[in-house]
View 1 (spheres, protein in one colour):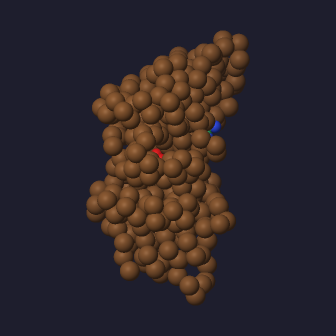
View 2: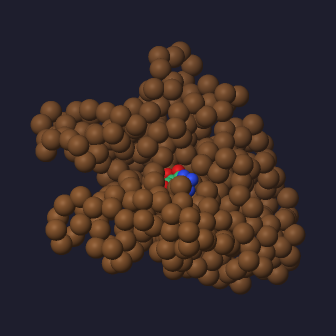
Length: 336
Ligand SMILES: Nc1ncnc2c1ncn2[C@@H]1O[C@H](COP(=O)(O)OP(=O)(O)OP(=O)(O)O)[C@@H](O)[C@H]1O
Ligand SMILES: [Mg+2]
């Protein structure tokens, strides 16, 4: 049995070889501080967020693309692998895709967690490689491909050729930051404080970055800052675009900088092939045409961008002969 894991800031997605995605849940864990036991993980823990008594901590152990709590991250991985692997005789092999900014110590912690579930072998794979594989792009040829993965905590931009990363940059502007920017905008303009979940909802439903309209609106509910009571206001596509403008432009600027640092031959390939957008942030309404217009390079969103990286971890097994090279040269560890 082969298991692929995309360990993201917002979501943990697990694939099985030939079965595709078998688990897709928020990267959240609820922990009883009195008994020091795990109460719930994933969706169930996410529902407890903001609704639990003091002695239960509901934690996002990965934040901004880095591991903020390694013990709870390990517990989360173990619980999730147990769910999909169950009782078995043959021990699984695992490929884990990890956030790009983690340290060697953190990599070690993740490997240990995966090994402690009884797996035979654990490989780590870098996110951009997995994202391209997931989108069905062959990465072993001497051809440049660019991928921009906009997740919850980080946006990772990379140019890949011949199984390796040529140029890359990562910035901490992604889904969570978009939500915060919406909250700040509404707070300044309407003196209403939104919850993070409300901000995320309006981001997913109302967003139109490319040609936002003044008269397409949605109602948002929060708390009036001065009166302290529930309140609501209407938000238009134009206002939402204004709230997100700085963040999106900064992502665009960083893509431009990566292109500047990339050798010209590869830039030529990228202009011909286009820039691949993955991660939940790629679903932002109008992002694809907005970035295409800003950069003058065609951008296209991967099919099902939320699971693209995870599906890449599944494919990594079937392409191991091609990937071995990439596995070893890039921070990949093998234990047997
Ligand atoms: N339709 C949508 N429109 C805009 N944003 C969306 C949409 N669907 C999901 N998102 C956002 O995508 C983010 C999660 O994306 P994803 O699952 O790719 O992140 P992750 O892999 O867990 O994080 P990271 O890669 O940073 O560790 C969340 O911030 C979520 O709000
Ligand atoms: Mg991700």
